[in-house]
Image (cartoon, rainbow, N blue to C red):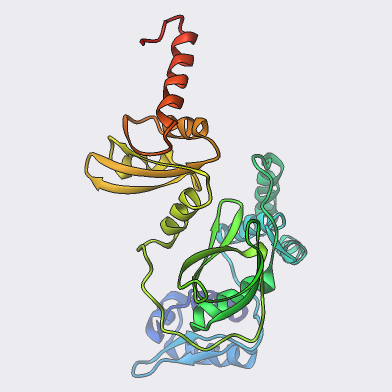
Length: 323
């Protein structure tokens, strides 16, 4: 049988799984009687843990307290939290780096040596590469927007667009999306009477929130897919659509975020909508998917750009292009 202090920690660990525990199940897990479980629950309550009794059947649930209690994490959970906090120290959310570092320092101080070694091993063997982090956004702004989304309250904000300049907007916020290196707000713009996407780093909320609204139906079922379509079609001067002669599922891993939006047609084909700065960029992006395709729509000079690329490839092989 577990000693009292060890048993209390074990009981607290079970309750922190956020499930309802019948008293008999807890007693079986701890190797004690249900009467002992009741006494241990009372001890946890005296220590400030809000352990609630279940209605209808003898059992318990850990509720949310007024302050954060000590957390009991298993090995995998502790390593996952440490890695997540380490990643957050280079986050694009302004002001969170120092907080994440403080939390990581506290966690590492209490990690067993074997787990601390695993975390340090991963840290020392990892190099951050690729593109630089995107523009930082305010944590307060993210929370204000998220709260308006949850409460279905209109959001007023100042917005700076690279093309339209500064403006004051009122919108019905729907979702925040962390896409690529940027944070976006998908919302219904009441001033324009249409769905819009806003870069959060260009947005400054103006409290208080506006009146509550009834959520509208999104143009697409998947808000991330909707954002991908907006980014690939509306923000680029050159836009195209091609039919890929493979299923949407087969090519999904070959279309990176922000490149374009895939639209399923049938089991053997799909549409790829994409945009770029130039027609040569479109050619490179389309051919990088490595699928047979047919041009559906695009700039008038896109076919010529494909021919130029084909000629370069044939010339590299020492072959003359067909006229």
